Length: 298
Image 1 (tube, rainbow, N blue to C red):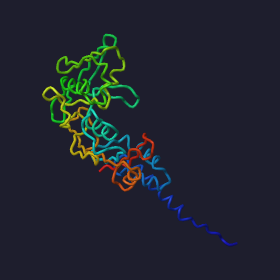
Image 2 (cartoon, one colour; image 1 turned 45 degrees about the horizontal axis):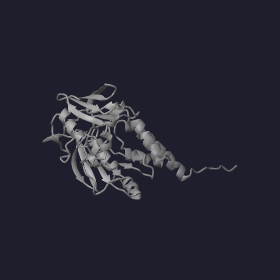
Image 3 (cartoon, helix red, strand yellow; image 1 turned 180 degrees about the vertical axis):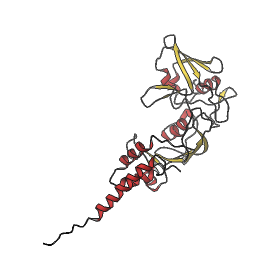
Image 4 (cartoon, rainbow, N blue to C red; image 1 turned 45 degrees about the vertical axis):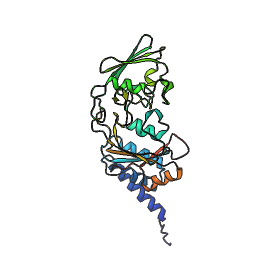
């Protein structure tokens, strides 16, 4: 009887090898020995989608956050008319680079949709939510080392108020009758009527806190309080920021540098991710809520 020998197709052996490499990579992720990009490439070779490979990487790496390195982010928005002036932040480029990374507001909204203190340490209302007192966080400083005071908050918010302001946030503050400093660490808002949601308004990305200068808010210097310090900004091209070593949130940020790159064309953004020009991608599809990443800890 003739013995039949079965030959393993080449594609089967390749998949088996890819799966083996992926398994080894998973055990090395926690120690930072495999980059996100390399892991995703292994996942794709093993038959996973980019999203599935990225999810698997995050699950393995989340327990071992690492500090250092840099990330380049491909942004779907941006224009040569962009400015660091918070009164006119128009889209995700300025919001992410200059509000989320460079600055802080009095409050922030967490992942569950709840408002939390940010530059404020605490806040409380009285008089039927017509009066709100925000106590500033001790130890919070601007990038130039100046301590954040109530006067800085007052001038920062008044910048968006008044008949001559061109701020996109003007309507958010129309309910405010008066803002005053009650000592160096407390800011008191008097509203025209009670508003239990007023702390949510204070988290708006336009309402970042800037240093006071000669009785006005100094937005032009780019000095803020955020996790990153502005290093270079070319409108319509990119914004590069470096780690704030004196950030008031202990242990953050994780990265040493971030760069936001203006790439409005969808095909160009996808190409930038695949070639390694960027590590993260905003809007890899026509949907506005999708982000892809292949972050490499460098």
